Image 1 (spheres, rainbow, N blue to C red):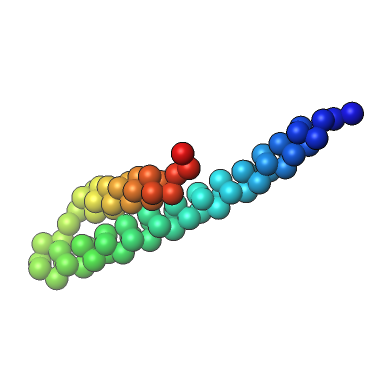
Image 2: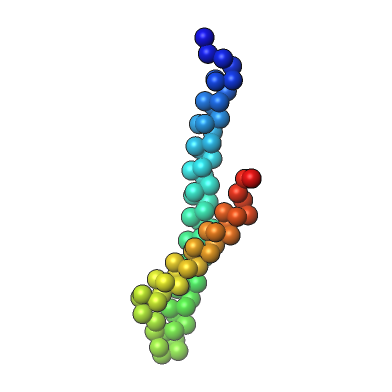
Length: 80
């Protein structure tokens, strides 16, 4: 026979896995979409001013924005 505590912990593990996948999707949405938006704005702005930025510079800025937003999102919604 399995103790009741063991049965309930299995349910919690499945629920934690589902919650982790939803958190990852939320993290991607919160960090990638704004990073893409501001990278496109920066690329269009540079192009409009006559000095387009290199793809490496745009990728670096986009990665930096996504990293900062992911860190802030994770810090705000982390469970202690």
